Image 1 (tube, one colour):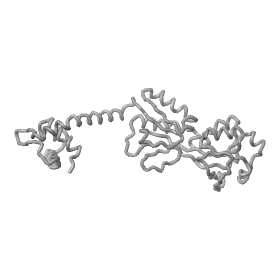
Image 2 (cartoon, helix red, strand yellow):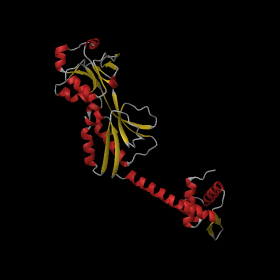
Image 3 (cartoon, one colour):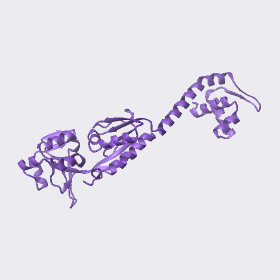
Image 4 (tube, one colour):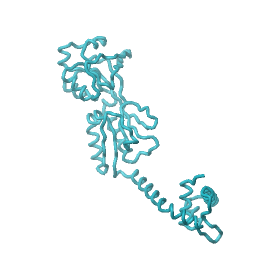
Length: 302
C-alpha cells in the first residue's frame, strides 16, 4: 500500500507542531481523523513513526529518518504551489497565445496592441501559425481557433463567426464576364483556399443549398496568397468576409453572386481542459470577446 501525499503532509505538520491535537487544530480536522490517517501512513510503510502518549510526543528512529527525508521536499512543493497560485492571480507575468496567422494579423491586429497598452505588465508571446498547435506540448495558455474543436481535452468559447463570399476583381469580371447563375461558376478560373476545398453554398433568400467541388486553376493553403491571386485577376474565389472587407471597400474586389454565401467560419477561444486559466489568460479571453463582439464582420453581419 502506497502512502499518499496528503498523509505525508499531515505527518510533517504533526512533527512540526509536536502534537497530534495541534496538527488537528491547525488543519481543521477532528483529532480522530488525524490519528486514523497517521496509523494508515504507518501501516503503509510497515513501521511506527511516532511514539504517542497523553503527555509525551517523540519520533521513532524510523520516524526521524522519514521526516528528514521528506521535510525539505515538502517545503519545496509548498513553495512551488504557493508561487503558482500567486502567478495565477497576478496580471504581471508571461502569457503564451496561439492564433491563426491571417486572422491575427488582419482585422485583429489592433486588438493585440490595445491589450498590451491596457496591460503593459503582461509579457505576451504570440505564436502565429495556420497549423493547429498542440496546446499542452507547446505550453500554450489560450488560443484562437477557427471552427469547433473536436479535441475533448479542450474547453472552447465561441467569440464570433464570419461569412464566406464569392469574389473576383473588376478587371477579371470585365474580361471573363460576370456569372449570373451558380452553374456558370465552372466556366471560370477558380482560385481555391485549401481549407474551403468544397464550396457549400446557400441561397440567402430561398435557403437552397448546393455543394460544389470546384475545378480549381490554383489551390493554396494560405489565405493571403489566395486573396492576392484574386485581386490580381486570376479568377473567382470563396473567401472569409473579414479577408475581403477592405479590398471590396477599396474597389479591388467585387462580390460575385451576392445572393449566395458559403459556410460560416466560427471563431473560438480554446484552452486545455483540466487547467485553470490564470488571470492573464482570463483577461485576454474577455478582452477578445469584447473586441470581436464589436466587429460587425466578425458577428456575421457583413
